[in-house]
Length: 345
Image 1 (cartoon, rainbow, N blue to C red):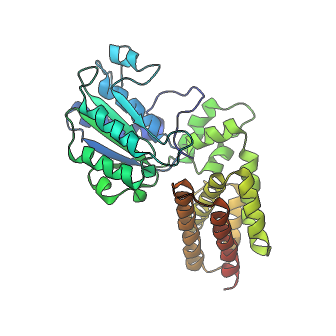
Image 2 (spheres, rainbow, N blue to C red):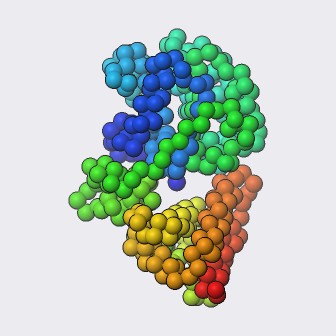
Image 3 (cartoon, rainbow, N blue to C red):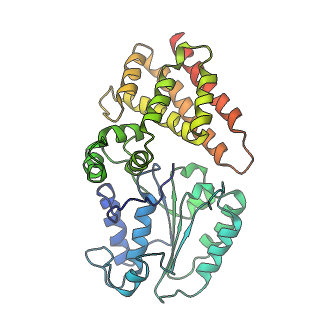
C-alpha cells in the first residue's frame, strides 16, 4: 500500500511523529536554506505524502504562523479545496504501473514557466520508485538544471529502487515508523467504538495511514486469516499451493505486503527478544516457537524471505508484464521451504 490521501477527515500534518522533521525543514525554509530537491524515504503508510503536501502549502503561504501555513491568506485559500496552481503532484496514474516519461516531461514544462503567484513552485513526486528508466532519466535534467524558486520533493518507501544518480542529486531525509504508544493515542481519535487501534497497528506494523485504510476496508479479519495461514504453513506439503490460491483471491500485491510485514515483524520480534511490542498475538506465538532453533540461522533465512518479498513487489509493480501467479508460486514455495530448513537443523 502507498501513502495516499484518505477519505476520512484527518487533521492537517504534521502528525505527532512528524513534528521533528517538520520543524527542521521549516527552519531551513524560513532561513532561506531549503535545498532544491529532497528525497523523503520511509515506510509506506506513515503519511509522507500528506506531510509533503502540507509543507508545499507552507512554502507558498504569505503569512506563516508558528512555522505553519496560516490557512487564510490568498495562497492558502487558493489551495484549500484543490491543488494550488503552483503545486504539481506526480504519481502513477490510475491503472498504470509506472510514472511515465510524459508525466516527467509535463513536470519539466511546469518548472520552466513563471509561477502563478510570483513566489515559488513546488513539485511532489509520490511513489518516486515507480518511475521507469525513461522517466527517471528524464527527471535527471530537471535535477541537474534547477529553476529558481522551484522545489522538488520525491517520496518513496523503496529508495534503493531509484537511480543512484537521482539519489545523489537530492538531499536525503527520512521519516521513521512511529511508536505504538504515539500512534495508538493518535489513531484512537478517528476509530469507532468497535474498532481496536492496537490490533490495527499490530496488523500494519505501527503505520497509522495503513491502519486507517485497514479499518475503512474492513479487511482486518482477512489479514488475520492470511497471516494465520502463513504461520501455520510449515507442516503441510501442499501449503504453498494453498497460499497462492488465497493470495490470488485477496490480490497479489496485498498478499505480498502481508508476507513482507509478517517476515519483518518476526525479525524484529526475534532480534528484540520479544520486547518490540509491535507484533500481534499470532506473530508473537510464531516467534516464540522459532526461538527453539538457531537464532542466527533463523534470522538469516527470514531476512532472505523479506528481501524476496520486496523483489516480488517490485516485479508486480513493474511495466514488464509480470505473471502474478508465477511470482506468488516462487515466493510462497520459498516461504514453506524456509520452515522446513529451519526445522531440519
